[in-house]
Amino acid sequence: MNRIKFDSDLMKLMTLFESMTGANVKDCIANEKITFIIGEGDMGKAIGKNGSNIKRMENMVKKKIRLVEFSNDVVQFVKNSVYPVEALSIEQENGIVTIHGKDTNTRAMLIGRERQNINHLSDIVKRHFDIKDIKVA
Image 1 (tube, rainbow, N blue to C red):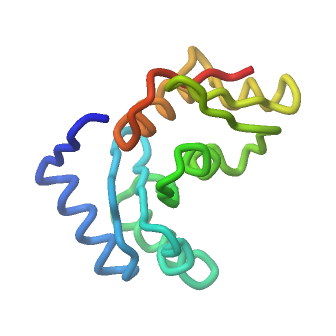
Image 2: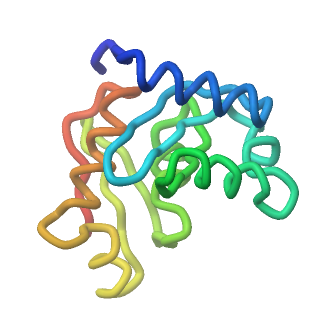
């Protein structure tokens, strides 16, 4: 687990999101889309009625926004991170998290083109938990 450092732009995004929604933001990752890791139980606040908070925020920053609810349990956090993709099971053993997909389409969505989805997921999880790798089976 690495120490998380934020630049001023990410701090502004996090503050803006917190003030608009009232949800607690634990982490923010910005690339082609913005991923907010929010506190446990704050998903309803963050989304807003009929998704109004998300839509307003997306219009302000002109990027897609993705929300992931934090959990102290690495398996639950990975499950929250891959949602809406449904995995058969997620297991952690010896620092390696294994996601079992129910079919080839599910596994393909988890891995992504040129492994971009699984690499992004691995980066997010490694920021918060002491794990070695994430595998899709």
